[in-house]
Image 1: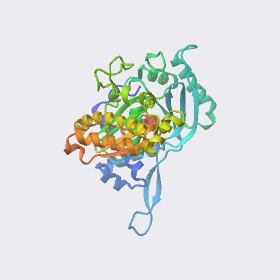
Image 2: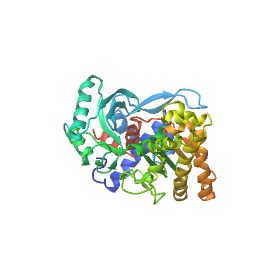
Image 3: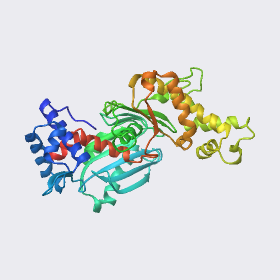
Length: 405
């Protein structure tokens, strides 16, 4: 569960201010108290009080540093103290789960990937709790102060309640994942869709770092998007995934597993792409794809070699995605559009198809300066869960819990 009852007005201000100071120390440390006061636009007395609490809790530490252009004795600056604070980052996939113990700098301490079987033997929630318990037992000699658990997964999720309503590949419905793990461990638990968490990770650590307005689209087995608006993940406390994959683009198209017809996912997901390529192969006897098994890697390699079938198939995905993105550009007016996909192996084919469609169909005033780029992380692993923890420190929610002990 991500949120307890909403704090009162004064408590909310304290939480926000503490988060701002922590973020500034993270970004600019070593940084002096005077510089913190300027950057945070808080009174020196407020900075002193917040910093004292963080020092007492061993969340920050003092260090000597030489300010640029200064002479004489070094100044006393503040940096984060992250080594002795750990959290568990989890990513659920169909068939397995990856668990990573990290410190508050996001550094990996230890990582395991374990099978996550179907529910024929026991309920999925029971298996998940047992895996977490086993992880802590296996690595107990490496554990420092545990702060939280963060989990990312596909499916239909309510981030505020930590309830997983549906999880692809499993029968679990309305599974109280956050509440159950919180009760079991006594730790705050953060649950988020893996695409939304990946979008947040790119904003904090990757290709869109520092950008205020970003659309990230993921084209893989499923198609979805995350949106950063005003520097914040859109609807991060609810259902943050932008379900573009189940937006109808052809009312007479193939039926989607969601029940609708002609969804974007039926023509742009990687599975649909390979099916289409296999159908077209029967009419393209000269294609390079006849010489090898048909995979995403062979399709992208053929496209890079100029194979007409491969190029046309990937470009068609780009045009479909570009039409959806053009509508989103008109709504959100982003600075950046990121694409995370195994099809980035053929970015020279995919990206021009996407961008040309956006420029043709979006408002010129919005599309003229958009930067289209690949995600920094090809496979985010548990870095999306790490981003949830970093965000909870920056907004002060988790930070205040650590300060309170």
